[in-house]
Length: 433
Image (cartoon, rainbow, N blue to C red; front, top):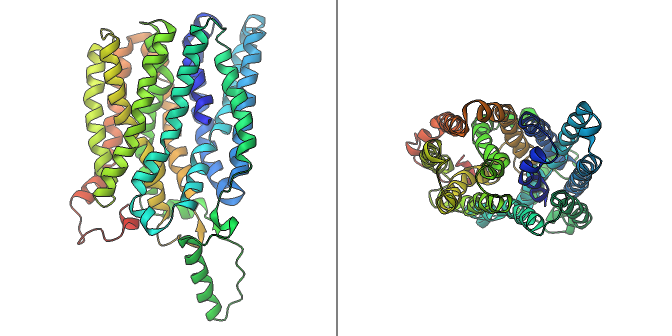
C-alpha cells in the first residue's frame, strides 16, 4: 500500500509538467527532497520499530502518506502555482519532503515484523526465498498505481484522481494495520529468538544476577554499524538504489515523450512486474549456494550494465514491444539485488551472534542500509533532470551504467571472499554474510 501511494506521483509526472505547469527542475527537486527525507526517515523508523509497537509505526506512516497526497491534490485543485510561483513550488516540495518521512516506515519496520515471524531454522535456511516472495508486495503496489493511472486517464477523469485514490486507500489500510500482530511472542508463541533470550537470562540468573524478562532491548546505531558488513552493504546499496529510483521516478516521464500517457504507464509497469521475480530468483539461488548473496548480486548487476548500454544507444528508437521485453528483464536485474539486500541480507546481518536473542536489531539494521542507500540516491537524483535536459536521455543511461559499476565494485571484496573463502566453508547460514 505504501508503494501504491509512492508510485502514483511518478505516473502523473508528465501531467504535472504539461497541465499543472511544474518544470522538470522542480520535479527533479521533488525526487531529491523525497529521497533525502526518506533516507533520514529510514534510519529513524527502523529504530522506532525496534523500540515501540511496529504496527503503530506502520499505521502512522500510512495515515501520513494519505494526508500528504491529499494536500498535493489541494494545491492542484486550487492551482497554487497560478496564485504564486513561489508558493506553488515551495508547497509541493515541502509536502513531498514530509511524504518521504511517512513513506520510510514501511521498509525497515515491515522487514522487522517478518523477521519476528520467520526466525526458525528452516526459515533461516530458506530466507532468500521467503523474503524474495515477501518483497513482491511493493511491486504489486507499483503496478497497481500504474494501472490505476491508466484507468483514470483512459476513462477521461482528471489526473488528480490518480493521486486521490491511493490517498484514501492508505488511510483505510492504516486502520487495518493497527489490528495486526507484530510479534508472535505477543500472543504467547515461543520462537527461537525468544528461546535464545530466555537461555541468556537463565545463565545470568544462575550466576546470581537479578533478572527480569522485559523483552529484548533495541540495538543502538553504534552496535548496528559494528556488525560485520553492515556499513559496506549500506554504501554499495546506495548506487543500486539510485539506479532503481531513477527508473522508478522517471520511466513514465521518459516513455510519455514517445507514447500516449496510458500506453506509457502500462509499458512502465512492466519494469515493476519484472522486479517481482527478481527478488525470488536472487533469494532462491543464494539459498542454494549457502547464502552467498553478494556473488549472485554481482552477476545480476553485470547483466544490467549490458542492458543499460543498449538503452544508451537505442532508447529513443525502440518500439513498444522491445521496450516491454527489455524493461521486464531490467526489472528482474534491478529488483533482485534491491529486494534481497534490504530483506534477506539485512536479516542475515541482524542474526549475528553478538546481537541475536538479546537485542532487537533487524529494524535498525534495515533502516541503516536503506537510509544510507537513500542518501546516495537522493543526491544522484538531482542530476537526472539537468542531464536529460542538457544532453538527452542517453546521458542518463550512461550515468546509471556508472552507478551500477560503482556499486558492484564496492562489493568486490565481499564477492571475492564468497568465491574464494579463506576458511573451510559456510557451515551456518547465519554466518554467510
